[in-house]
Length: 334
Ligand SMILES: NC(=O)c1ccc[n+]([C@@H]2O[C@H](COP(=O)([O-])OP(=O)(O)OC[C@H]3O[C@@H](n4cnc5c(N)ncnc54)[C@H](OP(=O)(O)O)[C@@H]3O)[C@@H](O)[C@H]2O)c1
Image 1 (tube, rainbow, N blue to C red):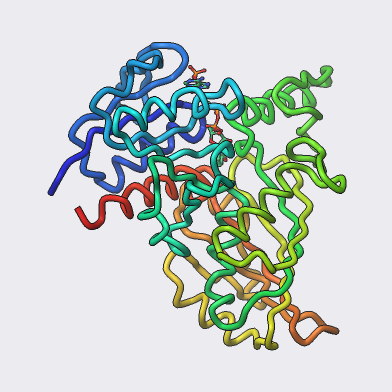
Image 2 (cartoon, protein in one colour):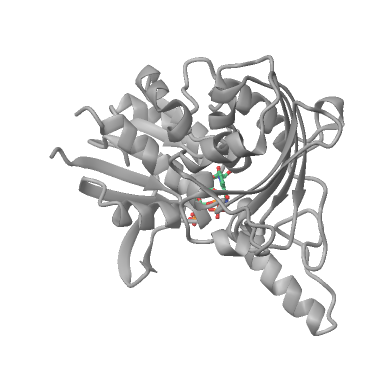
């Protein structure tokens, strides 16, 4: 089997998970370079990694570059992804910078893995909330077109990076010690609170995170006609995003047929046993690979309306795992 020269950019919450998943899934690696802003030795699960300081010279000979650095104008991907592509690598980017560009496939492997073939050097990994939503909705979409989606997300602190996750712990300790809370990584207090804002406020007073759910879902499902609106909320959970999702389909679907199609979908686990008090919860999703779906029920007034509760590990399926699965889809035919 061919082996590949890889690099991972960023060793924060997502980058570390990428390193774990490459190992777990025995990705065929000829060499692995780990890059971040500052060089150091890093220990992860008993293995030592030499983290090198990134520069434009870092990508010589690299075939696949998994980016999990910062976003934006001066972020890792905008600064270094074009160099990596010039050097011959295919970049798989976790950030939002390239996701909506026409020549950049946006891929969730259970939904549109074939789109990886259309890459011109960069493939984007969608936003964590989008990934788990489309994994759960795409099998239902195959039963009947989805016309409308209304989603509320309950997003874990680690979704905003290692700093936000650390802040959940430090603020909780400060609160319990009766001290003033230090607010740094997130814009508002996260301990014993929920924040109805993720990203900046933009068009029609929705946040950038809420628009990601709209535009990315359209692109992945290849259907711009779905009417989508969302509220994205940060909650004091360490890892595991939850979503309350309402959909309207073209033809009315029964709970049984939805449950059956989800039961047969790779990457989905239905946990929907209300008599036994079982439904998906974020802390149980941590460290797992599936998208968990429960609380499947009909709208009492709208025959085409259905509710779902969808939970997944935001660092794994919501980011690192999907990125590695994109790399696997990329090399599948080699
Ligand atoms: N967390 C999630 O659930 C999630 C889900 C989906 C997508 N994402 C996206 O994944 C990316 C990484 O997120 P994260 O949560 O892992 O962030 P994070 O915990 O803040 O870690 C960021 C890492 O990137 C490195 N870095 C920052 N700027 C860099 C640059 N210019 N060049 C090279 N390395 C740089 C940092 O290096 P140093 O360690 O040297 O400072 C750090 O190791 C972001 O684009 C984020 O939007 C995150």
